[in-house]
Image 1 (cartoon, rainbow, N blue to C red):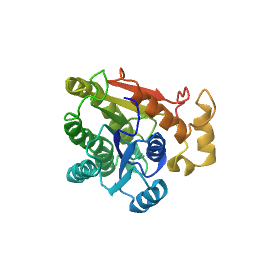
Image 2: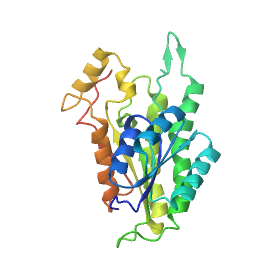
Image 3: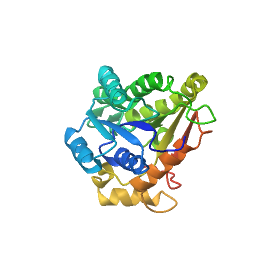
Image 4: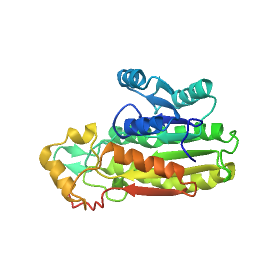
Length: 256
């Protein structure tokens, strides 16, 4: 689907990091954007800056009823939803066994609730809205659902049992969901980023970031703008569905 002023986007986790960059990119192309995030302060700043064609709502994606409400409010505001991007997520670390203890099951559960359940809630309720849309092009397309995975789904490092498993789950969801929804004119895909310049990476020690960047083919982290450009390209390619695509600078992790 061509991103134009006629389209409505619903984006979770859009108040910071890669999600925010995606919000800005899509908004700059003229589309209407609804941003659901837990950070009310960041939402207010984003809405104040972008001013028009922007709607923000506080949402805890681990709560199904809050996700449904955010989508309902978006439809009330803009009339429908053409694309839903589940960018809300959390990266956690807990090793399976060490001198300090064992895998934190509470952390495992909370990571799964945010990264997997939160994404599925978005897809469930957005699909119901999209299925009622009229086709927006001659391909019969009515909507796009996009998840955010990670290269960690395939190359998880020590301490990433929880995080990697949630991103692996996202990869496993994409194809069957695309097959479920294809008959309704809805595409489903996922983006798997590598190392990017985000608030999380800025908090890492400099020596750690140097080691991570050295594992890429370009010896640097990706920028949020590069992620956002890739997202929009995938949205506009009407034959992409049922697949997870990596954007990672050619990274292959050493055993960190």
